[in-house]
Image (tube, rainbow over all chains, first blue to last red; front, top):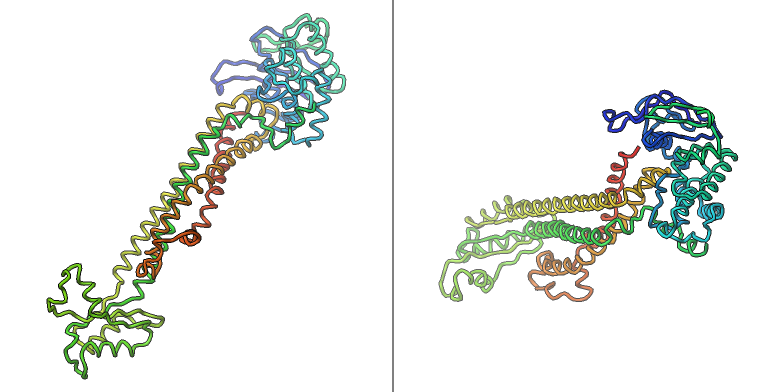
Length: 226
Length: 314
């Protein structure tokens, strides 16, 4: 599912600082991982590697059976469609309605419009935003925007779901609800990686943990023992 | 749910927000100006070609024969003028042989000699206008035979002038062609600049859509579709604006292009359907082709620009 062998990442074409160094770990299909570490440890960079926003400068990274370092550029879009991402800053399109934002990955994937309507409708009910389908993101609260971002990540039924600080804008109740959603998806077979530094959340939902510090992997163990 | 569904028809789904990002007034306006210039260049191209053809057909098919001392006796009896006329009339392949009357000669000379030309008692040659038909003899061979009948007879064909006019027409056509290429190049540059501005304005949306798995073809197609529409609209406006200008020019050119127009004065007062007929057929084909060409330039340029830009994304 995800397999890293000695993966390193440098920006600026190799002469910049090394953001990630010598990462080796594997996440099996259907697995769940917390990705923990202080700010600047490289959590977001590792997620960027996994969701194919950058390619590794060293080592071998295999995502969903594709060697990311050597894959042809034209093969990556199809792979990206199998990966759902909840960004820290949501990255919703401000000029589109909630409905259109959630429909985006389905339309990019060329799904028929009837299926798009059915799936998006169902997804908006699931995150409790059916009544806001026509609203623009700017008209929503931070928590509602986060739920739109989650709905968009989940609606194409990805094999792999990545979330970067998904509870950052949520109060305790909403964060808890989100974790229930992620756990539910994981139970249905989706591989889930959640980057956070919300320790209380991790304590309430123990799971295997990848802990980063200064761009290196310092622990790969069950939470509490890391 | 009813409201969003109502405005979610696929064709109108503008995920990259290009309706605002691509200059929807400036681009068509600039393309319209380019299309207008292209129409003028095309008219120049077609006009030069048709004028050259008419001149060639007109001038190459005519000879002027001058017989000095027309009234003097010729060797075989009769006047020199009559001998030359007899030879010409016996020659096969001549369309018409028409001696100019004294009045016509005086008309030709009046600009140089004034109204009293006929009273000056100048030794004027006889002038015979000959129109060549199919199978006409070579001008030099004909001249030899006429000189044999009346020594000193001059046969003037218009080969030199036809050659010069043809060279001028070719040069004009080359200039018009170069102008056309230049206009197409500038139009492509304008589209590329507009597309780049659109890319810069929608960078974040493009990155989001790219991250969601959109292919380069998907994103480039969005830009190219929008640019194609704007360019086609501009091309149509430019062609429509050019139409009356070209009709006016065609009216002015009609007397020169028509083999009889210059003599009859026809074409100076064209009206209604006759005005529309004044425009050569190739231009009737070229004008509707302008929006199509603009659309093609818009589509291709946007595709190339966007695909190149997208290479910076992994």
